Length: 180
Image 1 (cartoon, rainbow, N blue to C red):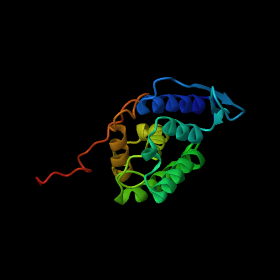
Image 2: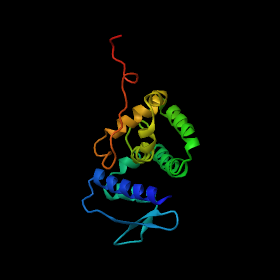
Image 3: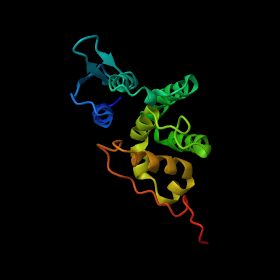
């Protein structure tokens, strides 16, 4: 993790706190060469890693539905959180198209990553993919239509887009009206 991505991770955690309605901001730092985010916990051990900290914040906010409402959904949420950290973060430029292709195929019949319910996976994947979506051309957004639809849906979800600018996703091909 670079210094830049460490700063982004800290901003993401801060935005997540706000979207969860947590009143008292936590104290964060980074640790080691890879600048892993660390939550300085006042009444317990410090927590490290964006997924661990984000999961803790969701539990602290008493929003367990964001981690999945069934055993299967919880596993899918964990899978996407792991995907974010292992595949998406620090992804080489030449692998971005593969990630978009896989994600586009996966989202073909889903509203959100874990199915029909918005979860922490959507928030963290949105934060992780934002810098890629910003750079896509109109044609690329159309090519990855399912990713674009999901992304647009998530960026308009209440409280998600705190520290990030909106990305224009043209709707003309995604949402067809009955008038042809």
